[in-house]
Length: 125
Image 1 (cartoon, one colour):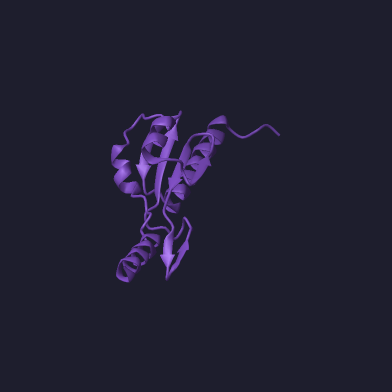
Image 2 (spheres, helix red, strand yellow):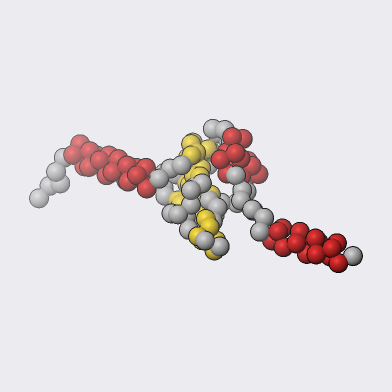
């Protein structure tokens, strides 16, 4: 009887250490271009963070990482970060979009706005 109780306690202790990670990369295989936000939420669940500007909306997913025995919930440290980008309310792309992608997008916008100003000519004095 003592052995059974010891085994049950050990099993319960191990379940507390179970890995609760969500495999976002695996889930993303069910995404497709043109899906609605509701469809993405049904596949991926709620995003951990959103990033919105006038041209697009991003839903960002990641799992906490373990530092020793401590879970650290930090998007920048996550090794499984997945970003779903919506344009006009539909999926335009998804994957591991990084800070470099954000900087490229910002510089592209800056170039486009500079080009528009140049086309309009210099303002009258």
